Image (cartoon, rainbow over all chains, first blue to last red; front, side):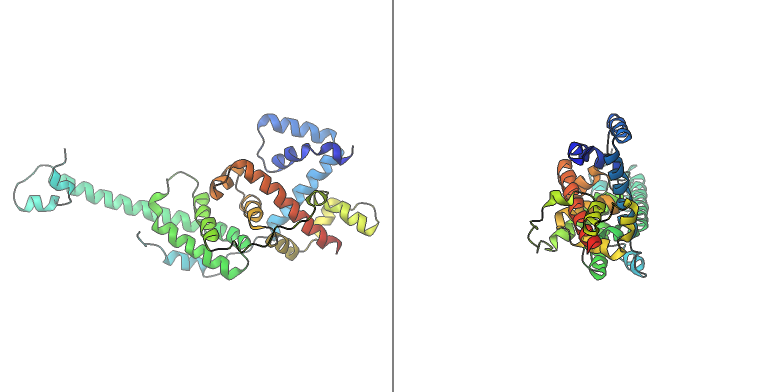
Length: 77
Length: 216
């Protein structure tokens, strides 16, 4: 199956990856993924990309920032 | 029933001048209890907000260009949050509430010195990276995981920061902040459909940048 045939699956795939689908749509997405090699490969790729973005783009909070924030407490409007 | 004087906060005075109003003592005690309860709520709010600081900072760091800017933005956010803690409704999503303050401050800071949207053919970017790599190398398509692994941490960070602001806000909130579409819509005060389309376009841009990187 060429990817052109799956253009309409894009929205379903993204929603599936973001866990934003209704239970009914999840069933639809899963059964499509079962039968479509192209979308399954895309799913795996998109999934690993998301995880990688999450891992790579996360930095630790700089030391001292939490103390600075704590000092801001007690300000009244 | 309260008397008018108690309502004006002079319950204590009523007793000293000897009217002996039966409601004044309890009124004062109630007021004291309310103040104490308010203080407890406030401390609880402050503690809960501070416990989320690393998550707020993580999103801030990817929304702005530098570590210093992110730190300033987080401090401004907490200063404002602590001042207006009463407008937070307990039991609702505090992290989203904080991020709403943060994204508004970020927009107010005039970050709209925005580069013109790039006229890049987005549809092409929608092909997945492996195809790009395969094309450029004339090899058979690499395993998807391998392509992702070829990307450096810096390239992801650079690609994210190169996104248009509107797209980046949504991608960062959903992918880094783990917010739902609905939360992101509320934080940015845009319709959920706009969240979805910006997310889609933002991810396309991201993939296009990463593809450039991977095939460079």
